[in-house]
Image (cartoon, rainbow, N blue to C red; front, side, top):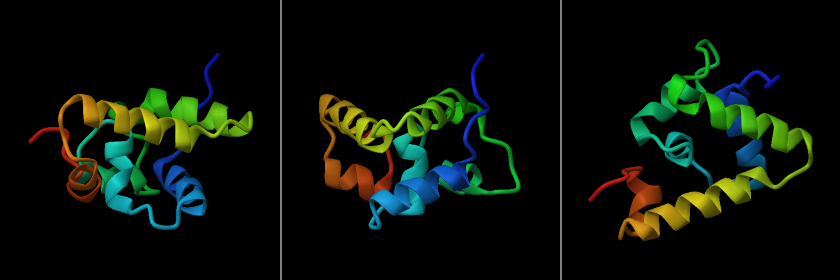
Amino acid sequence: FMPEPLPGHEIFEAVSREDPDFKLSQLAPLFGASRVMSYEFANSDTDCPFFARRLAMIFRSASAGGLPIFKLLKDSVEEEVVARGLSLEQFWRDGRWHK
């Protein structure tokens, strides 16, 4: 019914091709978690972590369908960051969803 979640390291590779300035530490915040989770998420020896599974499934499906999933995700994340009254620059630098 749903595809397997795309592994984090493959997501990072896809995003890095689209945005060469995207940092590994920004991967988990792109999926709603803190920066610290980025390293486990991108580890090719571990399964996709629970916090990212559904969105990683969507990432796989959207990518396969030719949709600009990274742009859609990034735009959505940035809308949420602004709605929370946080600085976009600080968010992408520190990867925190709170002040």
